[in-house]
Length: 388
Ligand code: ADP
Ligand code: MG
Image (tube, rainbow, N blue to C red; front, side, top):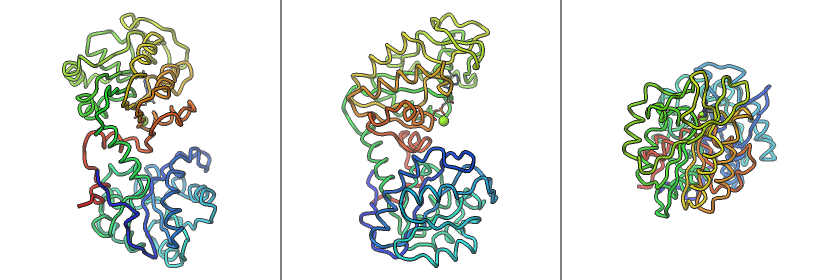
């Protein structure tokens, strides 16, 4: 996809940058700063050329109201540290009078962070009036919030119709990485799909599975496929409303779909588990991970991949007794010499926790955004950046 790069943007005194600083907070501090780090390059570049930078982001779902627990104040502190310069911050409504005053005070090379865009209900309504208020804060709009480009919101979509709009470095990098995956011709292409819900992932499966040689399925997603195939899954998490969809996908892609042959089961998520053949799940048991034989089979399928995409943990990886399958897959992906991409919030967290993220070609900062991009859609936050 050919995006208008920030490198070709005209010089301006003030740039308005949409970043995705939606990070997990704990006791008023940033728990994981991956997304803040990812936003630094674009901001540094603009400061470096002597421009003022107004940065904006959402955080969580404050439902259109100013709520202190959803303030970006801790993010402003962390961003200051990462930029090694004080970041000004305007708490409260992102286009309120305090914010407007701060914008006017901003000098060359200075950075201001607006507070949570979703404090204003007009943000998620893609309201042109709100977009116009934001647009008055800069001369040029820079889209760098890859994690939010699948949303048609005022700060990601409506604003592109008002200001000259350019793609920041993170958005460019993500799009390049995902394009390389889908536009490539190296074979085999291997897909690894796990996580919770089939309904979130049908379109990606349909789009990518047509190209892929191998589709490895694990996690609760596999439970739905097993269930659809008539294998008893006890009390496992599955989507009984999606059985027909699952059957349809298995019929279309039967030559490449691989479901677990053994699994880790337990009567309770809080207890440990044991491995059984997939046909032997008890009626009072839950499937919570892929078993050791499946891990070996999946590893053998992963290693020769020339292109690989992984989304969704293979089990209830948040609990140690059920994290082994996800870890084994993370190791295999890290050992794969092909072009490897990991997308999805939980999948990215799992690969980061395993310490293997460095060995993956690209870890996407966008969960929903990377999936929707891979479905082949032109996303609302990107449509306005396309080179005509
Ligand atoms: P991602 O964020 O990478 O797209 P999802 O959000 O789709 O992934 O799924 C992640 C969730 O799926 C995790 O919370 C994980 O515990 C859960 N999960 C995976 N496998 C199972 C399973 N067998 N039983 C219950 N939950 C599971
Ligand atoms: Mg998730």
